[in-house]
Length: 131
Image 1 (cartoon, rainbow, N blue to C red):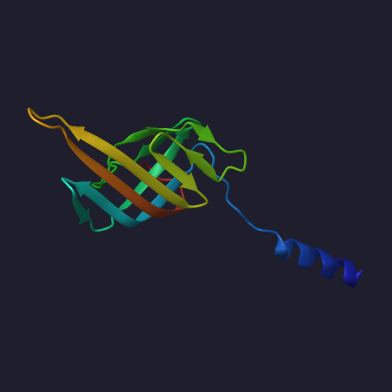
Image 2 (cartoon, helix red, strand yellow; image 1 turned 60 degrees about the horizontal axis):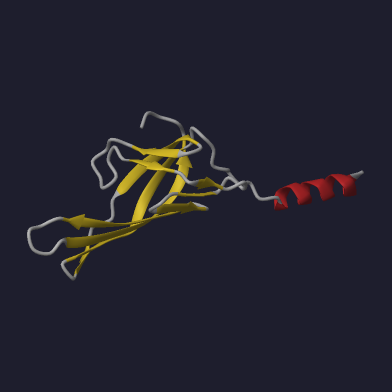
């Protein structure tokens, strides 16, 4: 009997306790890198903190706090079956890592100016509070 109990304790302790992403989850993120390439120059920004909520299977919504993503909504194209990965046209979330990249075209009279932005962040699910 003691061996069986010890066996189950050992088995249960080895199982990973993963939190799977689901609709309604709120994530708190801290940027690890934030860069912009503008007119051929690399600009490194001070990393910011932000939060987002999975509003439904095809949309994430960022908080209204003052940061790069303030009030933004991004469309989710695919939400993996494992619940830990989802992505859109210009972002990916994978096992707690968030990546975003976008190119902006600024029209002008002569030649349009392009600006490229890239952000990486580490995120974790947090207790629910208003976004």
